[in-house]
Image (tube, rainbow, N blue to C red):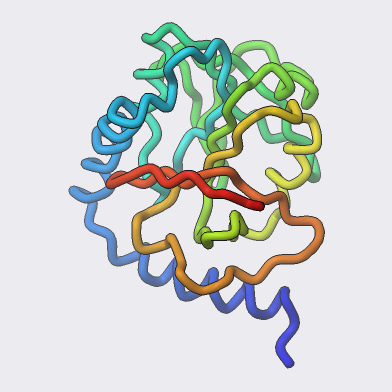
Length: 197
């Protein structure tokens, strides 16, 4: 039988191959579509602080979503990647303040780096995903950044994955004991809460 790691790797390869076919127009359109769904589903209503990734590559664009959240006004924490699996945070203050950090890293603010424990202030945490299933299992890129970072989140925080609609799987996503389950999935088309019980 194939190991969980091998199953995850094969699924990542398949999903990334499909993502490579997404047109530039579709990627750009996803930014406003995400905001429309967030408004329709009141995902930001009554929040004071959220955390959200800065999209890169073939991910659903979060640029307009980050701007929308900031204008609510909601404080928005964005990741600051350090060495190893260290992930700090900074407050987002607009797309124009983000600086490119290299080919395989998201843009980041140049502001003060807050410690990993700053995540405890976020009531909702939006994380990137390559795949999600109905039980709340999430497939990431394999580095373990978010599984490590989520150790610091508040016990009541909602964890919401952002991915493309076809990455929401009816079949179980391979997972192991280190994988943190999510509470919902946001796509450019819809928001789906997940009942993990």
